[in-house]
Structure formats: structure tokens, C-alpha cells
Image 1: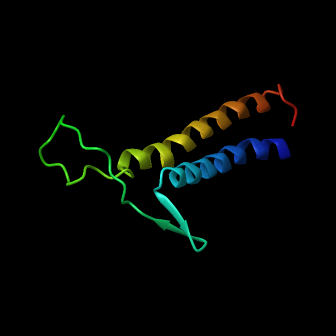
Image 2: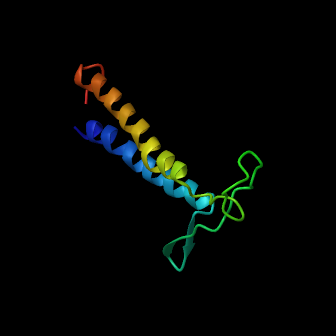
Length: 96
């Protein structure tokens, strides 16, 4: 029972910690005075592919794509892995 719970909860914890770590590493989350501050000040370099209608300085680092990958993509992959692992636990390959 403990192994089954660990198989389900571990991906959630890994996804949460990895998201916080990488967003902190990339400079999106700023840790100051033991409070998590959210800053969106870094910019991508502007390219000449679509030069019209771009904000001055380019687009911010924390975009919808970053949110989708970190907040949705990583946990989804871990959940699919947990579901796959539970199939083996249920069939008795691993005795928990």
C-alpha cells in the first residue's frame, strides 16, 4: 500500500519541485525575504522574422508556452508514467 501511494505521489512532488527549480533558475521566480516574488522583466532577443507589432525589447521570458510546458506538460508526463506504473502494480508484477 505504501509503494502504491509513493508511485502516485512521487511524480506530483517531482513535477512541483522541478517547476519551481527551473523557473527560479531561469529568473522568473525571485526569492527575496523568504517570499516568492514573481517577476517578468527578462526579454527574449528580438528577431527579424516578424518585425512588425512586437513589443519594444521583445517578448517576456515567462510566456504562455513556458506556463504550458512547466505547469501542464511536465505533470502530465509524470501522471502518465504513474498510470503506466499502476498497471504493473495491479497485475501483480510488483507486489506492494
